[in-house]
Length: 148
Image 1: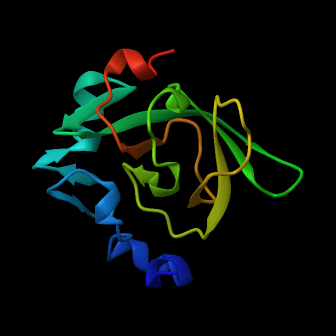
Image 2: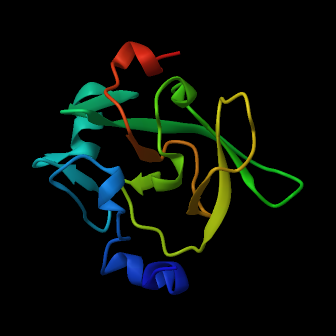
């Protein structure tokens, strides 16, 4: 549990920490973006559209756009994204909202489409259609691996 999880209002002044073992080398977070080797992933998505992939050595990150959000009976959210993340070695527990900082507490989230709809990520409870998410992958990913 981190300080930004306990007090989400701090997200506007300090970034959520990253588990750097799960992200490519030379990655750091800002309050509303993730930067890999000097490349803003929010800006990359603006240039390339989504989904988009940034590969570094033996790892990668995928940027996706949320298409819709549905509340499940168990209180978790089904978050539908514009990519097939189950075809890559996505580390869904490290998924991050980029493009804006949220001061809303986290909720359990199932990133869909997926064959197993079990919640596998934690994102701010106010995620909505149009938001950008970035997900690290434990292996090299090509765009064709994630495009629907």
